[in-house]
Length: 374
Ligand SMILES: [Zn+2]
Ligand SMILES: [Zn+2]
Image 1 (spheres, rainbow, N blue to C red):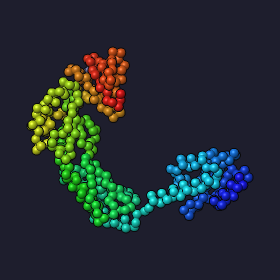
Image 2: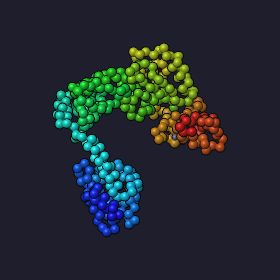
Image 3: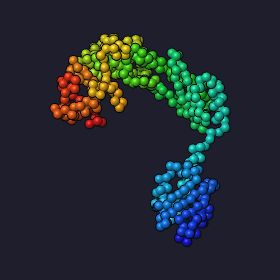
């Protein structure tokens, strides 16, 4: 241990033994020209792997994220000196990473940004974080809809553009030169909003005049709607944001006797689709139906709820299994129906299809499990 102590003094001159047994060392560790207070507690057998390191709050914070490496180094270092050398190396790396992380932007960053905001107008700014790293702007499209754009700045602004976070159904790319400003991002955003005007007009009409089952609270980027039709059936549409009045991708959900005639209508009336007319109007004409409003449907005995758990949403899923008997048509969650059918002595399974009886009408019902749940 005497030789060890000699080299310890040489390598870490500020770390000194605190007792005769050599189980406590205290002092300072130097890295990047700074001294950090440490205390090392060794067990009586002086085994390094059971050592404890106590350090100042500041050092602890710096070494946050390096605990695993430290633990591993403690296990493998042959003696305290070699461990202290490792600790010094780790601390060097931690300090360097931290400096890069905290590199503050040049002074002209703030003045450039504030000048930018003044040109744009503070009335368009909804939020600025205290460090001027995040700015949220609002923009109103020509139909009076409000939109938000969140900008995350790097210290290299304005050489590099900020990251733009938007709620659009298409990707938003900013054309940027080091001479560009917030005003230019804002006007590019307005242009993007304008190009999506027809898309939002189409979906706003649907959201207003039909009962949209999903998404529960559609965002501006959401291109999908599941619309209630009645008779426990619904249609799912996926709208192309660039061509919102063209025939969207559709599929139906419900009992065969309700859904099959609609599929036939869709196929035979497809020539009636008129891109000059609104999406909702086209859907009505092609399917030859009126979409019932939520109020009207809720007054009738229409229910999209699961016939087993009586809820609509279950762990984020909606009832997408339907009894195909024309007098029943009850819908169920896949998970609920699966549990129900498995509990029936008369049910049988073939690959991912389970055959059994509907809990409502006792007619045959089949459940096709999606692959992930088999
Ligand atoms: Zn259920
Ligand atoms: Zn049934």
